[in-house]
Length: 287
Image (cartoon, rainbow, N blue to C red):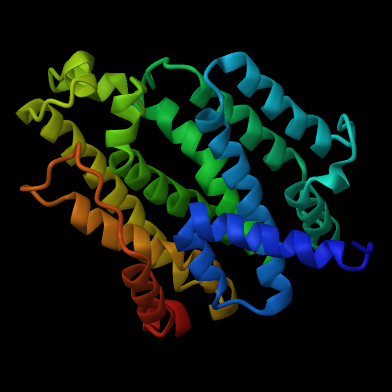
């Protein structure tokens, strides 16, 4: 393989990784120009790699080592050639081409150390801090690929990330409960009298429903705020926030009173594409 072929292969690797593990974000990049799309896919592939660490290890220590490699790579201290890792190579390219700040990426890695342990998320404030450093940061950096940074974009990105992140917490409950991991804030569980052991046992209780309803209401409020803030940005920047349309559709589905919260029900790829295509042509994202 020649050096001129390697970047294209790395880009294809990132695209395949995001398509396989984060289809809504992958689909959203289909509506972006080619140069920006490649950088976005590098950013999203990096996020997939960090999120997947928990699934690839059976103990926290190996996970810590994997996350430390990414921290070292971002600091320019990777053990071994970063160019040999297609995601790292593409991410470094995006950082260089679009002058992306490294610190938020390093903080994202640090925040995901929480995933390696089964400590419960203590409070709603703690969950918001976690989502702000992960989901919101992704929106902020993605927007920076298509436009200069601004306070308006950061404000929108924060609410967008909180909305999307809370929806994911509710959607991922079946997986998290099965491995005795709790992203539902302990504070909210206690306020509704919901026992952690009931959640881990997959019991549908009125108290759990109250917890999920409260979280869904929080997500709904952040979605409404994000939607109102979208109008302040040019359409070229709004495209980065297309995944919000999928979060809104997922929230509607997850909020149904007759839904079993422990039964996985992901949206099909065709439905996701349809949702994003319709959103891309709506006044919310074009006017």
